[in-house]
Image 1 (cartoon, helix red, strand yellow):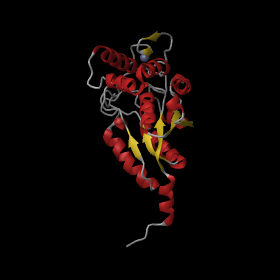
Image 2 (cartoon, helix red, strand yellow; image 1 turned 135 degrees about the horizontal axis):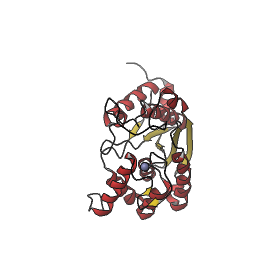
Image 3 (cartoon, rainbow, N blue to C red; image 1 turned 90 degrees about the horizontal axis):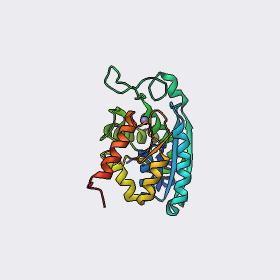
Image 4 (cartoon, rainbow, N blue to C red; image 1 turned 60 degrees about the horizontal axis):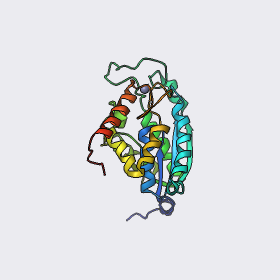
Length: 252
Ligand code: ZN
């Protein structure tokens, strides 16, 4: 029977099962995932990506969100570790999408919205896993969702499961990729934030996260900032209204 190499055992010891890395973009979904991770794990770090997105407001609000999170939640402050911002400008150089260039939102010939950045989440997860490896985090958490999504194939549960297998094979690791929002809708995402951190969490997500594709932060509505009309705003607004008006199964 083959012997297990000694360095493999040492590497396993270095991976801390209580440490998580969260893909945190500054949007509602990843902010809720960050709260979920802070509830689940002992030490949580964050990673964000500058891929020359059309509006840098998401990157601005993520700093504000982390600051206020530490102010408002003492228990989470002690668990929240370093934030890592990675430059992925090469993604925008591959070609136009409505996420990185000033073009109209519409469906492409293949039926996918032109906000789809091919390969984006695969690249994000690969960089996140590489950082998790270096930081000794066993868990990687992200906000992909099949329920309300725009049809992006790299948000699908099968894509994430396949990535988990590939990343673990390629790095000889045992990462667990978590997507706590995969099967919930936007109303349930608001409710999850409330369950985790009460009205303070809902208020923080409302004011200090950003979803609008147009980067509009001119006026605070009850569901947050945004134009109210782009696909991301419509999802966020409709989810908020359903959260406010229905007796949701997750509601406590
Ligand atoms: Zn908008």
